[in-house]
Length: 119
Image (cartoon, rainbow, N blue to C red; front, side, top):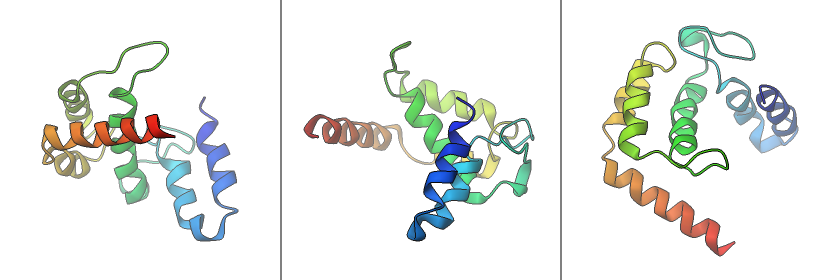
């Protein structure tokens, strides 16, 4: 599982118009406190795009049904992310995330789910 960031990086960096996104793919599991992977980057050494994507990816993962667990509510996801501010996530990114109303996140989830159902 931990290799998925490196595998994604290796795939995406070969696509010319996605080259800049490759670094985000590689570093989105780094943690603000340095405890993440694959490089153990800390704080602002983590690219800003990866710090933003880390929160977005977490919201999606937590609020999506998985084979091993049911989706959490957006309120539960928000609380989990709030609790990780300054340790797992960039506090400024968390603050920006928390300005988005829960109903907006729920609407985005419905749109994503509807798109998936039509594919």
